[in-house]
Length: 95
Image (cartoon, rainbow, N blue to C red; front, side, top):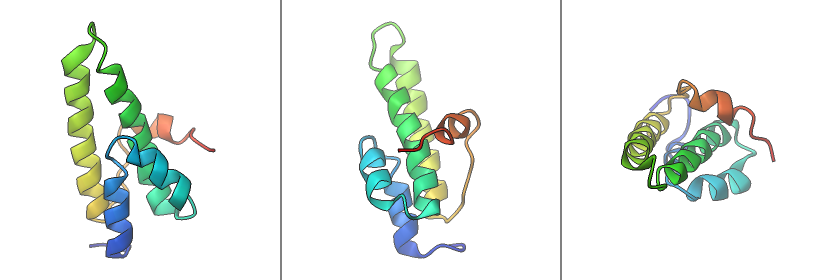
């Protein structure tokens, strides 16, 4: 694991699981590392919700699942990986 402790890495990885992204962001936004991953998780969560609409459906939902897996893996390894496009939307989140 890199510069972050294992508890932070696990929390950041869990923030890619749907609604947990919002909860973890609210509870741990004091940690820049965890907040970074939780924000990306929130954007992916939103994308997965769009994937539940019949016309857009499974391809978008499948993409969201892949992005969740990639994000969680990178977070667990202690990497601050900026996902293309996702990170741009995530950087605008501030509440």
